[in-house]
Length: 396
Image (cartoon, rainbow, N blue to C red; front, side, top):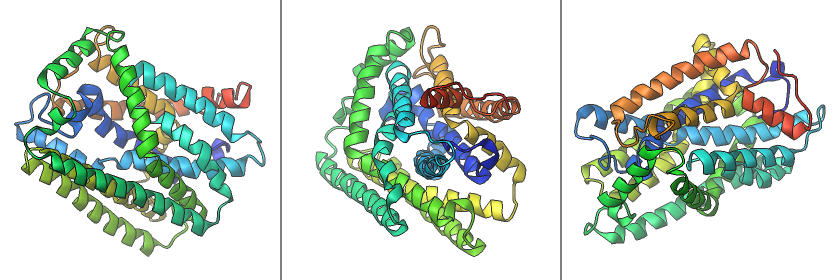
């Protein structure tokens, strides 16, 4: 993240980033625990008949959706601005930093988890970093334009996908029949190395999809993060009434959009058309939700509310890559076979929620404990050292 010294960090940005890291796990746990399509079609694996499992899925879709990932990407864009400012005092080139992040993401994606976001993040950032020279109006306009264009592509895909009709299920249309799911379960339960080939193939497909179809969303969020920082929105410089209005309106609209999409899919029995419509609703809803959460954090900081909670989240946000990769390590050990527990496809959403809560607690207290002794998270320290070409000071 930014290259400036810890004493010059923006605590509210760290808290918001920490919230984003924790929120991502609430969604990603489904991809670790089951086949990826089960996040959209929850009845494919594990029990979904009970009210508890349905409620957790609806709450995750409505209150979290992809807002954590959206915030993380947006704050990475803001960090590109901070890094450029800090470079006047500590001249470290952006491309080496992003190249090392790309390598880290490739190792993460192909060895551990196909859902990695570091690879597309680093690749897009290598282009977006040049936007530091753009005007503020240009950043707002191009960022919103890219997000709108990606949304239009999703709408077009949803309309075309709706032509499938109801003759086959959405899962079958994507190649997930019971035999295929059983085969994937066997790979994951057998062990870490047994599922490695499958993970690599899905990682490649995922990266291609992200780069070809979703790079507009990634770039758009980064540009808005740059604009948000330079305009003062992400540093708490806007009036309280503006933050209050944005937070209230955006959270209400975002939750409404996400809930409407999820409820429609549930009521339609997750038909192909309803699943695609829900993806569109989640895309737009998560963008609005992210705006609402960002405004709410800025409002809380200006009113000095929930100081202890914000400080705890800030600790998580000061070592985001370490915490992100720690989540992968824990989830891999739980859901993959030897040397893990091999619980893939065995734990329902209520069980997954308990795991998420446990990891959240561990990451909050673990981050506070670590940063009392060290200046950076372990991965952040390694990343900085590699980018600078020399070992960085680690002790606090």
